[in-house]
Length: 220
Image 1 (cartoon, one colour):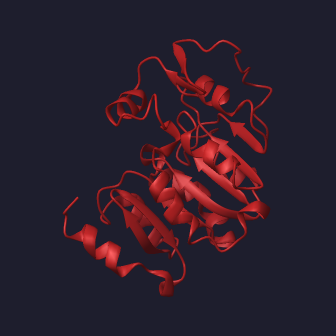
Image 2 (image 1 turned 45 degrees about the vertical axis):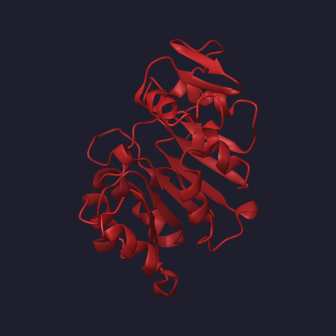
């Protein structure tokens, strides 16, 4: 399945602007968040860097020989990091507000494929992650608003067969339906947490009990 012919990537980004080497939407929650954290003009790719670095420590495959999936890539801050580490990166982003900016941020880099299909197992005619037959997957990242049971269920075959590390962003607690689905249906376990981001995997020996207990105290 290939979406490249359906979606024509623009050379001029509507409603976007360039700050250093980063393209951002002129007005979006992501831009406001980066600005509030002082990252726009300094180190925008540091956004979520800590939890990504933690997740890399749990990988059971050599990233230089494997694939990462970025489900809900937004403007590409994680995807840009992934393409510097993994042999290949499959990027999913269907929201028109982000996709032109995302493409511009990836354009000068290699090793990535961008799909703009909507991912939702409930909607007839929409795609699922499993439709793309991705191979040798070491890491799957789900952005918070795409980490739903209906997106996760469409990635269940890929996750259960290839057993990647799964990073889910922006969920406040383990009672969230996405975290619950991974544990209940995919038989994954929570390995680690950084603020509201979660790392799930398969090996109980790797659980970071100290950090999980720290965040369970709601001190952050």
